[in-house]
Image 1 (cartoon, rainbow, N blue to C red):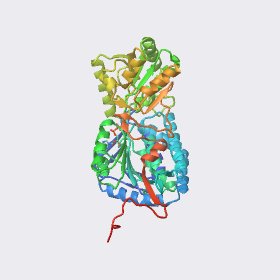
Image 2: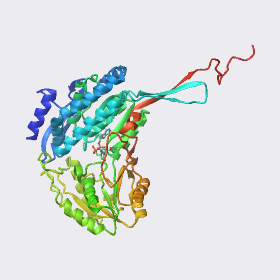
Image 3: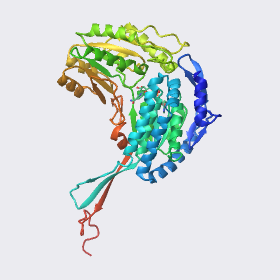
Image 4: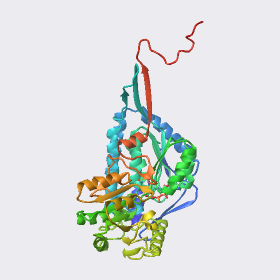
Length: 504
Ligand code: NAD
């Protein structure tokens, strides 16, 4: 059922002869490389197979972006804003279709996918408002000069996104980049390219110049690397795993271009015994099991004060057993399968290693064998912070519960990680809440909550979770060049140089 429905949706957008390929300047360009398979995680059936993109695309997409970028920047800022607002409206209009594509290919429960579509529309609407407000400023320099600073686009920007949130990360990065006047070449994960292709098309339909946003479809180590090495790009934004992030940063450094790295995490969700326990319990469930645990900000280390540890873990086990795991396309499903076979094997291996190290499985059955869908039940491990499962990303519905003694111990454990993406504290002690928030190394931190994220507020990591910031005004700065202009205003200026003014 899902394949027929996906085909129907795609032919509405791209015509009846639709084939997966790169979307550049209003056309789909089919590759001729290695065949890539997209499988349905629920039952392991083949959804699509398509060839990797060819390297000849590097010049085609790059030239298209350069040309469209000039056109875009030449427009009045308010007109760019108006088009961006229309992109948001076009996305809202396609909520059913986009949500279904995301549900069927990224394995998100349909209602969660609808939420993602709305959030992506909001990203374009938010930055639409910024398009004519990204103005410069005047600096009161101590000389006779008028000194003003203005923001200019970088030019072409390369963006690389992962499979866990394809639609969300696509809108998240494209919207601020084009609001700041840039053109974008986006390479989504080879496993989930479809929703990004549709966004590329909707951007043009809303009136953006053709070529302003190209979507390149294929592997990262082939066409992704070729783009970074060969295209005329001025910055790379990478959302993905820490290991790939390193390759990207090296490739960008070789061309002397900057990068934004939005990488993984191992976030500490800290529960004190003075918290509202019922809320903390619900928060802990959402923090780790939402999105099948395939979320960069997952609360994958659950730090529980030792006075309430046994009770809290037992209650969490009872509650997690009630989560409805199943086909993401079915109404009522709360979490779907792990996205792909490689990730499924990784989760299984991490569980085996955890048990070998002495972690005790308190909830969650054994993973269902491969071939019958890549399902892993919500799993709770009794562990400690030294274990491999507490140090590396599992990126599945698996939480490691870790006891702590007191506030200092909680902060020490939370910061004993190479990552620093997010974290949370649950307590009714206001002073403690702020103390902990100020001491935990994380780009995003919640007090008595988890996973609230909005396009208006900056997001990014400390440590191995990456660098640079997305969302908010910070993202516009990331996607801008800063120019300082000095205007001499004195009638008889005094120059700091006076060459040739000596005696004859
Ligand atoms: P990944 O690193 O395997 O792949 C991400 C993207 O990089 C894909 O498009 C892939 O094709 C591309 N890629 C792979 N190798 C490449 C190379 N050598 N050169 C250029 N591109 C290359 O990550 P994934 O498994 O798709 O995603 C999961 C990871 O993403 C997790 O670590 C998760 O925490 C992270 N993530 C981070 C954020 C954030 O905002 N910090 C958001 C979502 C996901």
